[in-house]
Length: 433
Image (cartoon, rainbow, N blue to C red; front, side, top):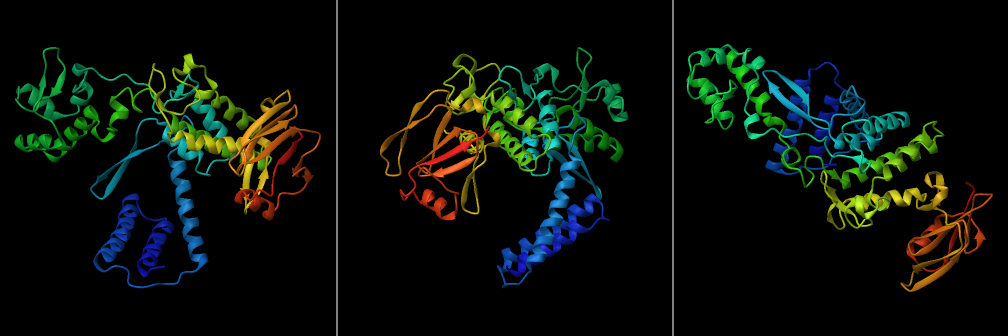
């Protein structure tokens, strides 16, 4: 790798493994490492190559994973869910970190992080179903809990308990000072209407010769009243387009993918929570459009949609990001896996109710792009992999048949399927369920 990247990696590794520095020192030291790298590359480009061992890379990744795991643990909320975003405030020689409000994004991120155990994944899901994120009508999660916005006259009110903490506000009100704070006709204390941003606050503080202590109290009150640091755009002020009370379906599909991965992991390790995770996955799946009727969904149920605003039908149909995760989860439900280039089928997530009770005809397009039909027996289901038909049939054994002959799916056969060379006409999977 380049000498500059090697230097950066060593510097960041030193930060990761230091356990005796303050959070501010940690942040500053890491920032200096990035700054040194950026300054060198922008000014002089890359100067050459440096050799680094695989063990050094592994040590770096292990140290990073350890810090990430601690970060995730530090963001666990008392209710069992996780903070999604935090607000960083730098102070003299220190810093403060304060969490923002509950969001689905943090739960999605931690579910797919690989950090949770199956038990923790199940506990998180159950906590979410009993939280303000839950939409009881559609049986899925809001992007953010529903909230009621303040009216115009309910804004810019300094609570009396906050005002009482500020000797400066008390004095200005007593003196009937103009231009900073005032008491309106209803008795509410407000910032003057000419204060439009933080620079206006600073100008007023300078004008009244506020002491450093008084100034800090005023700044804190100003932030508590207006919460500018927590402003998230449309998500906090609009009722549509991924705003208040919206379900953002791509985010929900991401969560479902992470939950499904946890269920698969539980089955692979014979974890006691495997069945409960599978049940939770399919329970939550009932909230998606293809499981609703048109009246409840408010649109054509089988088509992916961007979002569903509160009390309104699904909006913005089309190939949204949801489609990607839903394709992945459907393949995983069917047990389609590829490991080392070898195709295999693991039906742990499959449900018996998906098998057709009566004989049927499966219509598909073959590897030549021609329409084809395949008769399938009762208690079967069918789909294609690279335009090769795969037929699952309930049986007393688990087995795979390639072109009607029992045969293990090896690397050669898998390559033939992936390349669509036509040598594999049909795959049959016998499922003992």
